[in-house]
Image 1 (cartoon, rainbow, N blue to C red):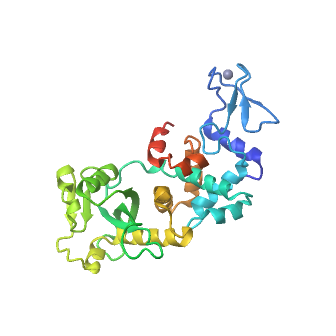
Image 2: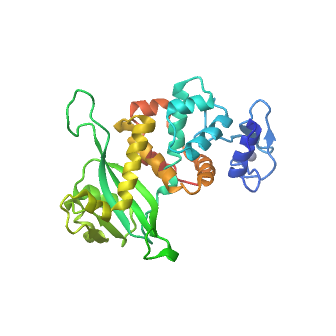
Image 3: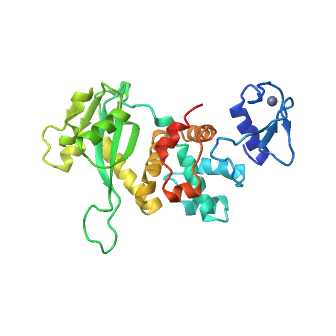
Length: 317
Ligand SMILES: [Zn+2]
């Protein structure tokens, strides 16, 4: 669909102005002027104001061709199990690793937005937490490099197959890096991600004891003797999701730093929740990207960039 930059800019224009160009300054709706030397810009015929097609998008102020962004969005959303920055750089034929790294992070910012609503309004939800990351060579055993990740997943049932084996499948997923596994933290995670009144299944950990007090129908594992088979039987979906997450983090990215973990969790969730609709994911990341500002390379390395506050700040359509 995008053999040249022209098709890319036409696509951006169509997304932003489905009913035809309307000047954001003088609000006159009329065919815009094209500028041969500035393919990413349209000019209003009336007030002469120049309007950038990439303003406010993840592609703004980059010298990377739009075609590379589009191909990047396609690869990131359709390749299973995702891509490392090195693979990405090679596929797009980019000279600099830093460019690939920054593009991937900007695309991941666009993956956060569609999953802000709460899950579980219509289905029971499994909630659990796990440790992600590994110990560094020579530092001995322990949890000092591990990060706690809380997860929630819908358990859906195919209506026509009710009661029979295999009728249950995983619905939408949420993953969040959390500071600890205390009751305040875990209740907060559930409140932020699961619809009030939902059925919430957990193991017997006391961190979930407050769920009935904050408006959930709590179904804890009654006999929790730490037997993994018993907890797997009670929480099958979230355990599979955690297992796939860890395989992906280790296999594709060889582990990730604490600083960037939430961005990778968002990418995993984005792809997981659209796994039956890869082409929708491609269209949506470009559409999403049209209104979400991305971090600069410096933001990422200074650690100033917060994936959640930034994405919620820029949620205006
Ligand atoms: Zn105008």
